[in-house]
Length: 175
Image (cartoon, rainbow, N blue to C red; front, side, top):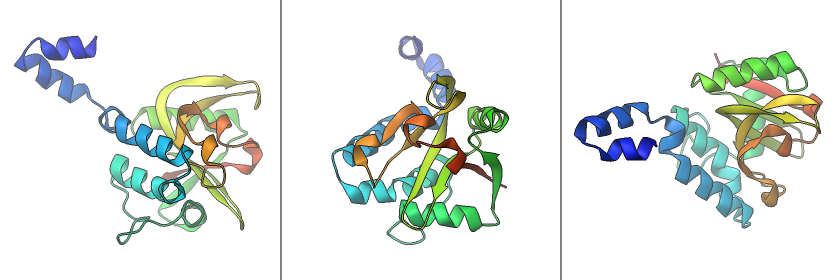
């Protein structure tokens, strides 16, 4: 429907461009990165969180040079960075709901599981939250690449597909 309106004329094109979100603008890039990671290109999996946060929100902290930090290093950095604040654990419905509302409003929110061996990051996306029978919670949509298990990388899927245990996941947003 939106594309049809865009074809009606120059005025409609201007209106359509004004309604385009950063997520819509970069949808193909995000889907391509997730697909490439799922096909086993581990370098893309590793660099994805830094590149995506930069592209979507202008957060350049995790790609300081030509090479982005790994997902593991970003996960650890976010938990210690004073520019980021913890919103709470992902096993708390109120925190998940607040995080989803923030993502809906265009505020960057990430779900992070940081450990010595691994670091996993999912970027919350705008969209309708999904009921997760696995978590017994209503959870936000996300985009994530999994360097440890590339086939588990997702685009526009709920975060319970990225993380097994919500109690091990914290939600963060820039201050």
